[in-house]
Image (cartoon, rainbow, N blue to C red; front, top):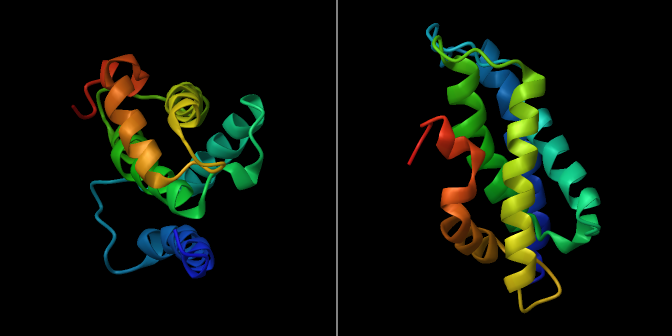
Length: 143
């Protein structure tokens, strides 16, 4: 990836984080969905903690891969689970689920990454390869 895109992806992630408060307070809010504040931060913390657990430096995960994980873990896992009326999970339970799945994904992405960094392409491939091992699939959130 060209160096100029590193800062662009970092900026997009920051913009995405700020957008959570806009969704919560803005005219686009859907009253059927709770949109819990702090969900994006919970996902970002899970990513950072998983990188530490795997002994990967924060610079090992490229900004495009981080944005890919933040966006998809938040939109496709966190929000549906947090919004479900049937499966009530608190933030701690969701965090444990995210961390387990992130560990599986990032461990696989790192093993298969030919570069010093983990790209969004490596993460995408890893998700496909470990699909049947992800805890989120047990909840039938998606699949």
